[in-house]
Image (cartoon, rainbow, N blue to C red; front, side, top):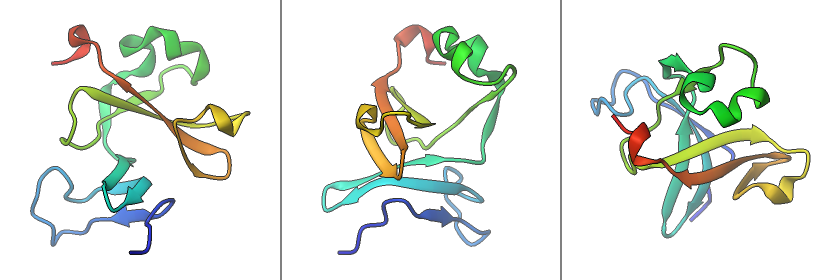
Length: 109
């Protein structure tokens, strides 16, 4: 099996699953056990600063939080470029990777 790590999956109108229809997904991990990716084009109507104040200083003011897939609703994935790539939980390509964590129950809808 060829890994899709670092690739973009672009869904057109032919995919009827509303979770992934018309999405652009960056694949960060892909192996025989499954895949981990982030949806890049579903901005929510809330900013990073409002939702995760600790991350506020790391992103531009007013930066939107993005909605991902439905697979693990209690997991958050932060996509970032790392000064030290070894700090990433999942390194996608170059110095770009993911930090993966659990979402606090008070942040869930």
